[in-house]
Length: 119
Image (tube, rainbow, N blue to C red; front, side, top):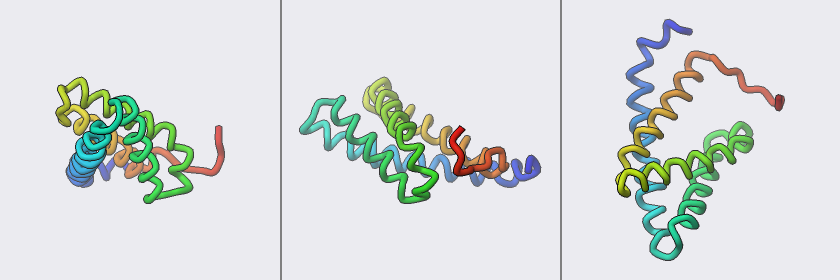
C-alpha cells in the first residue's frame, strides 16, 4: 500500500483542499455568519458545529454515528481557528484540509480497518 502514496498523493491533496474549502465556506463562512446575526457567537458556534457533524451522516451513517462527538468538536475547533484569524477562513481551511488529507491517506493506505467492535 505504501507504493500508492506517490500516485495518490496529489489527488488526495487536491480533493482535501477542495473539500476543506467548500465545507469552510458553508459552515464557518455562510452558516456561522448567518447564525451570529441572531445568536451569540458561542451559540452560533455550537449550532453550526452540530449541523456540520450531523451532515456528515450523509456519507456513511453506520461509521459516522460514533464519530459525531468528534466531528462536533472539530467544528468547534474550526470556529476557534476562524475567530483567531480575525474571522478569516484561512487557518480553518488549512486545518480542515489537513484533517481530510490525513484521514484519506490513512484510508487509502489501508492503515485502519473499521469494525463493529468498540474497544
